[in-house]
Figure 1 (cartoon, rainbow, N blue to C red):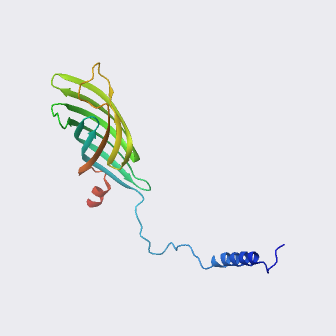
Figure 2: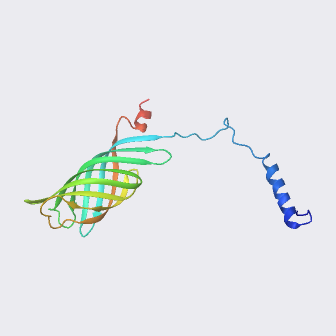
Figure 3: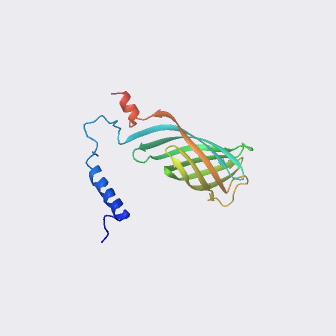
Length: 182
């Protein structure tokens, strides 16, 4: 049994006393105090312009129109679907008409169906993508899976994509739209 003359025992006794009595000085926050209150969820429902750039062996610019829903709460989540087109930057005669959907929540996943056209030639691809994204912006790695018998020359097989959806209008379900009309 340690004695009180032992430095370690005295230190432990003082520390225990400090911990036990310091609890009397601490109080939980009073619920009636003036605390900034924030809304648990904020929901946005928007019509958007989707703008993007895809870089693989060739660079492609993208423009589309879509609908985005975002929920901002403890963790932000967004999802959207869109229709648009992408065009090869250095060879504008190669155009891809597309439809797609995605979800973001720190990670990003999406899927697109694209019909590439270059004059009389065409090729259809399915493009899954995965990467990082928050709300309406994302950076993904994408891979074109050919669905046509022949692949059109000048199309990327895989790429890095950067896209962002800019708000054009708010739908009725949007929280900001509801608060303005009250």
